Length: 219
Image (cartoon, rainbow, N blue to C red; front, side, top):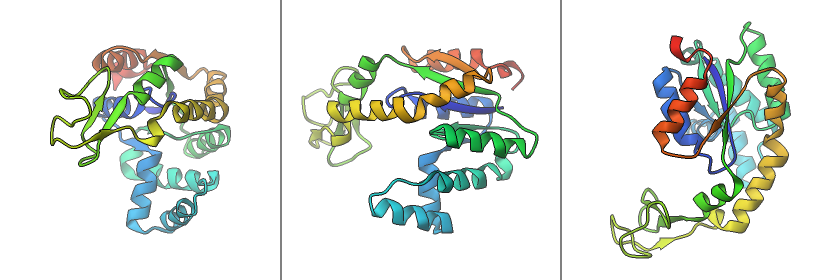
């Protein structure tokens, strides 16, 4: 199965991608991990990305596409994959179609995780991180600490990252609507889009996605 996972920030893409990939027995390929892996391995593409990011720039489509192409050529992706964070715009979506078409392949489905915008803001703006250990994450409503402002695990101070502030979250949503959301229409014309309501317990959302996949029973 060849799947693309899309949705706004805060929709739970990373969580669902990992769970779905494990259930389906296919690799979870995320753009963030591709960048980090190439940078840590010192590949030519990784060095180019590092320089761009160090200078505060945006990674060009051609570099992102080249990294994705290299990863999809690996043996473990031969029988399927789940893409998370790629494609991010129409140009990348067209490039992915061309890339798959060279081997006579095409996408199985595009899973669109749908979450109301106010819920996205609540999910992200409510996060609090521990200053001592960034792995300790709380939420003011869904997973509050026992003592306000104090990490349950190590007693560190909890704080709100600048990326999680409401104004920043709403700006990220605007960028999503402008740049990424159009790929949903692009793929809908191909009959590939399956919309998944991404509200509720994580296992229920996973099951909705599995049930909606056209080949889930055979995978």
